[in-house]
Amino acid sequence: MTGLLPPAAPAVQVSEEVARALADGRPVVALESTIFTHGLPRPRNLAVALEAERQLRAAGVVPATIGVHAGVPTVGLSTGQITELSAADGLDKVSLRDLPVVAALGRHGGTTVAATAFLAHRAGIRVFSTGGLGGVHFGASESFDESADLTALAATPVTVVSAGVKSILDIRATLERFETYNIPVIGYRTRRYPGFYVTDSGHEINFSVESPEQAAGVIEARDRLGLPQAVLIANPVDPAKQLPPEELDGILARAWAEAERQGVTGNAATPFLLDFIQRDTGGRSLDVNVEVYRGNVRLGGEIATALAGGAS
Ligand code: PSU
Ligand code: MN
Image (cartoon, rainbow, N blue to C red; front, side, top):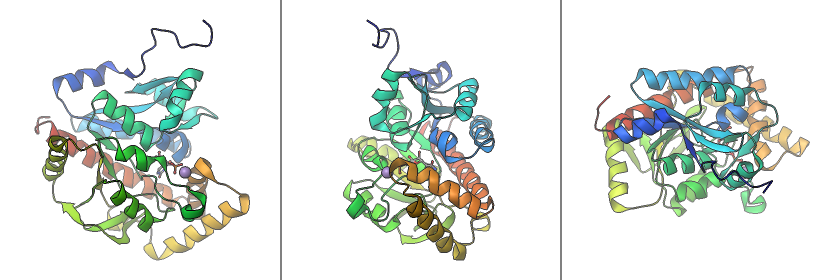
């Protein structure tokens, strides 16, 4: 029966290391792959992906980098697979709706927050660290361009540590949508919603937690209530390491103008805008992006450790 999946192919491949850690109740943190397949330029992308894994291991946490390798949605990509995906040309940006398609077609893909959250939860992983979430694009009331991250997070009870949503988005509208979808947004030691490249987006949020244990408490309470939504932990970048906030508006205005001039829309918009911002800031945005990610990986590890009962 050519064209069908081989019957032995697992729907989701969970690495032995991740499966064993989960079975033992040891802390595991999921990491997405779009960040290194589409978000960061080579060769920095591979270095960042592997550094995140090393950082977690050094903290006694098992990393589970998630992506699609040759059609197999994989939780716990090997170093070889990460290396391969980070160097592959023309691989797909895989959101949740794309998973069955790339699976059947046997393609490689980097998974977005939506697809990664789904696969992490399906494998039994409770914490997921990323850079910035997708959300509502400016003009969405006309274009309907809202990231599928929103609806996926509304239906997936994981914990996602991010530095807010991507700076290129309509942050106010995105926060409204989180409310609509019953997705709690909690600042880590702050009541100001972070702006990814900057510490403060200018928007206030209702709640903050002061420690990984307090974050773990919220997650436990969500699970006891049986609520299906993700818990979002918003972790701002160190103010000393942010992009100069007074420069951000100008940078974003130039990025949007160029995207409009070139007619870039849809799921190509994010990679295009991020790449533009990198060039416009002479690479400084890239350093901030890496710093943001490092902070989120660290906090994700701490929360996973607290959830595992502090044992590591
Ligand atoms: N944030 C970044 N770089 C990225 C992304 C987020 O700094 O590449 C990715 C994430 O994987 C996120 C996705 O889930 O972009 C959202 O894309 P879209 O807006 O097309 O749904
Ligand atoms: Mn979109």
